[in-house]
Image (cartoon, rainbow, N blue to C red; front, side):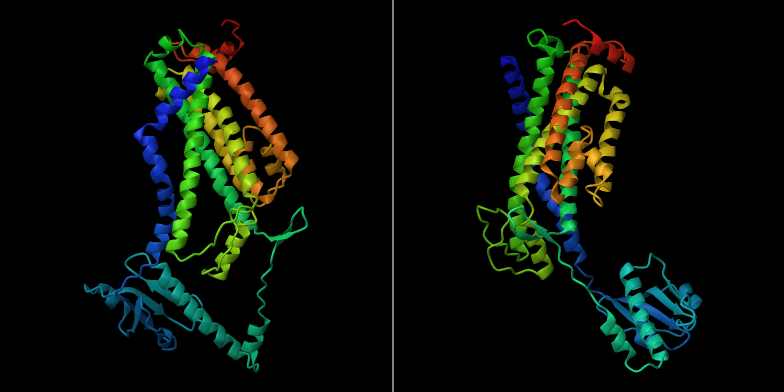
Amino acid sequence: MNHLGLIIKREYVTRIRKKSFILLTILMPFLMAALIFVPLWLSSIKDNEAKQVAVIDQTAEYAPLFKNTPAYHFVQVNQDLEAYRAQKDKSFIAFIDIADDLLTHPEAITIYSDKQVPKELSDQVTHLLNTYLKDKKMASYKIPGLKKIIKDSNIHLNIRTIKWEQDGTESESSSKIAALIGVIFTMLVYMFILIYGAMVMQAVTEEKTSRIIEILVSSVKPFQLMLGKIIGIGFVGLTQLFLWGIMIFALMGGIGFFFGIDTGIMTASNPMAIAGPMTIQPEASQMISTLSTINWSSILSCFVLFFIGGYLLYSSFFAAVGSAVESQEDTGQFMMPVTLLLVFALYAGIYSIENPDGPLAFWCSLIPLTSPIVMMIRLPFDVPTWQIGLSLVILFGTALGNIWISGRIYRIGILMYGKKSSIKEILKWIRYKGD
């Protein structure tokens, strides 16, 4: 076991010292934040120059409704549409052609343009004319105060959802926020299992093709070599997750400060608690209040456990595949089933959002090949403790069994050269009794 510790240390230290690991660890949280906030910021930047839009109204009823906005200037024209189209001077970016009474012929309006009509323009025209036609239609009924009656009859409910805690207290809840949290953690588990599992396979394949494995197995048992590689790379993944967690927490605090969001001082009893004046909109305040009621300690601890279990299960698959092939190019036939299992688990998790306690979610959160991903969707919805415990026991039990099977494949495949291995032959390696 002394050799095992040395192998784990070598795999861990070698990888965390790589420039690619350091750069990815530092830059990824900023890249993720940029992917979220930069498009929002860019979408808020408006063009200073208003665009000209021609209105050809053959009814002479609707053209006066169009008022200039900072983005568009509407110009009423009387010339034929084809005449404008033939002009070389393209001063108008679009033409609104109204051919008949829209109340009786709603299809009698068309927007023409040399390019794709901007959604902002289409929505603005639609809203303007819909409002006008609705008022005109109500006026045609000649019922006094009809518009006010309809306005008063529009009821907008704001239903609060409250969760009863075991200690008798009440807390605000939101299925949308719970689903969002579940999706984020599900994608993280899926991504890390795939990335670090593939890293194990790549490391095994490189050592085999370079023939360095022949030197290593002279002093270390193949099973110890495989297990040390899996555990060492797993520690690399946990280190990266830990660093990302710290950086994202600090980054979100910085973004909140930049956008004027005061989330107050965190308390020791609840790290998400809000203890200060809010300077944000009520909707955002409610969202942050709901986030503070999420059982983060349970979710984060389960996230680590399910990541470790899922990683051990799938990385042993990848290690066996890496030992059975001659080169990276030959991994496709063995990788496809494993990748399809992960993709199926991801889709099963996404489809479980609407019914996190349904049969699909329940069984897929117990089946070890899918449980690391599907269970992360269910956790924000307060999964019973016995289901979490049973899922973890099955997952780790299956992972240990799969490591043992993969070790039997690894000990033979890692020294097998000169021919491509078939699935039938790999099954024989598992039953082989030699050391």
